[in-house]
Image (cartoon, rainbow over all chains, first blue to last red; front, side, top):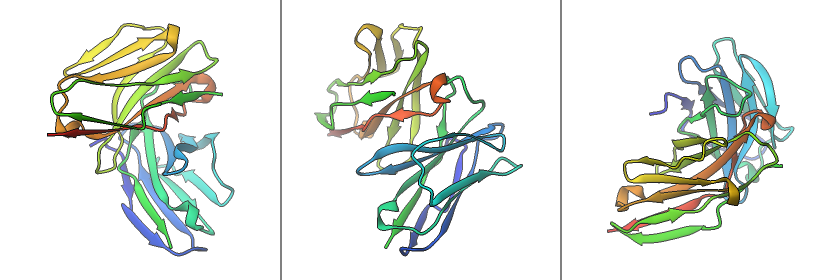
Length: 115
Length: 115
């Protein structure tokens, strides 16, 4: 158990809908990362927050947004969902940010299926 | 841009065989960090090891060992006396301070260990 929690574990929804994925980092970790894992794209970095502030953005669609709250949990919002958004979404956390050496510990993921 | 290549898509071995998973990386940074993660059938991503670019010592942890060679930009992972529980997808990843600590993953190698 990495100490990172994600809810829900599974999510089934329809095209055009909006969903929110939630992540709680390990105790003491200030940095949260979101990744998407799909069959065709593999594991891709989406966005990262450190202590409430956005620090890095990857291949995140404009329909997707995220935030990190004062209690350090993070939410990833996916809107106007398309079939291609079906994927496993991971949250990871680390204690610090910026040097590259931080080890990221991953949550169990949220498996999203868009029908 | 950073890139990680895992040329082996799938490897099948019989229990007790040794197996090596290859990882080749590309980066322009002089300081960078390499990681291996394991994704068992249950889906979570489990951290295995982190290696700094300035430390080329090989590492051994039980049946696992890692061979880092800067000259060939490779960070290979060997499992000795493989077991059925080793069956998983293994990912090699790269990060650096210029990438704001985000991980660039390879496509993964699926290892199947049969009894």
